[in-house]
Image (cartoon, rainbow, N blue to C red):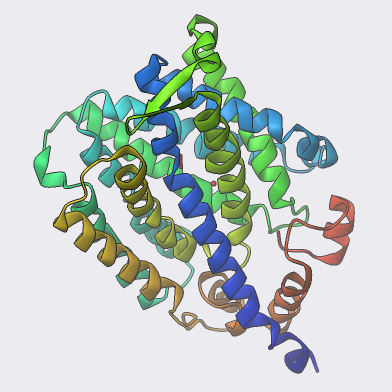
Length: 365
């Protein structure tokens, strides 16, 4: 009876998860295109990052207030998400590009998905699908082409270390987003995003000292590909689309997919960033970048289309449900999948109700 009720919802749940992950990748990928006119107008990169994170945190204050009980339920999780998935990724990445070429830093940061696969397999000891592993490798090869890494190879030990720090923080994004759904006190993914951005905003305020910026620039105009437009337009896009929408959809999608698969799909951010810069900023898109984008798409498809990894009885069964399609899990896993397929994680009324119902509720920058 459970099987006949839950099975029809599994494909739609997986499809929804993939759709949310793609929306997140597209939203994240446009952040650089929106930020560049603001930087060229006179704001420093770190102040633009502060504006992005703090603006998103303010926009999600109503969500944080609605889920205020999450602070008492999983304070360590929320603090860790803000520290790693928000502030850590941003700070490490911008520290890296101050010492090594942007393309090299971006490629190293997007070693996050292979690192994530290694973490799940060797630390969490959960089975990994062959498609996810192969897809991650193909996607990283494609990223090397997208960023044209051969045009700016430069070794700076500290810069490389910062870039690796960004990759590790990206792993934390997916691991913590997934951890919020488990345990005796699950946390709504909306709460994870809202409080994570609040924590990140506080940490970045101490790091960037935003009171030193000339915020009057936001009242003027900026230039994008030769066209003048109000500075508030790219600022609003960066805050509402590239941060609020990106984090919310990204965290929720982990509940339908798995951290390794969601991580590989996130590689599409680099492709989106390159294409939007070509269309909106007039930056050149060469043949290697087009070929690299196709490789990234191929890797993402291989990962999300893979079947669940085989696992033994007991804890291994849960691992199979975590690393692949939810259809390979236990009866309880199917029931949870059916529940999320009907309403989706993050849409119920209170967190107490979610915990009672066993809801399984899912952010680089």
